[in-house]
Image (cartoon, rainbow, N blue to C red; front, side):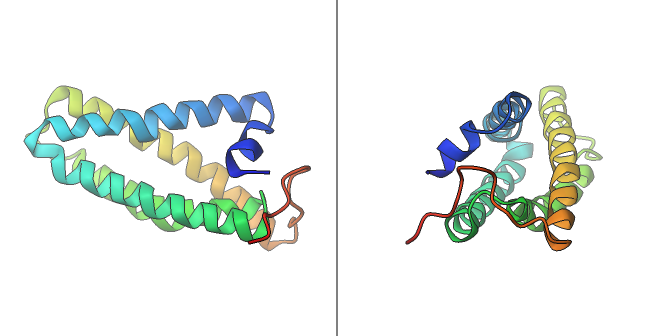
Length: 138
């Protein structure tokens, strides 16, 4: 089973959340490249998402669809969240850019709460891959 198929096999509420993440955390922040004041922030977001994506897919291919997949989010998005909170204090942000940053910040904070719980649960022994999502043997 591929990573995309494993995500699609999750409960409806998870699918809805993942679709929101696709929009609120990945597509919408691309609009930050519009404004000169937020281009560096947009680049940092894109690079962080890319590194995170590689790490999650690597873990998926190694372990399957397990709760530990939240660990790269903590590693990459934790510092990103701190950075975004600092950027929200900038006085020269256009109103639309500030709104996008708030949407991204709230979305990442919610996701990190789930990821922290999942990672801790994995650390305490919940290591079985979700049904039908065993690792791909490379």
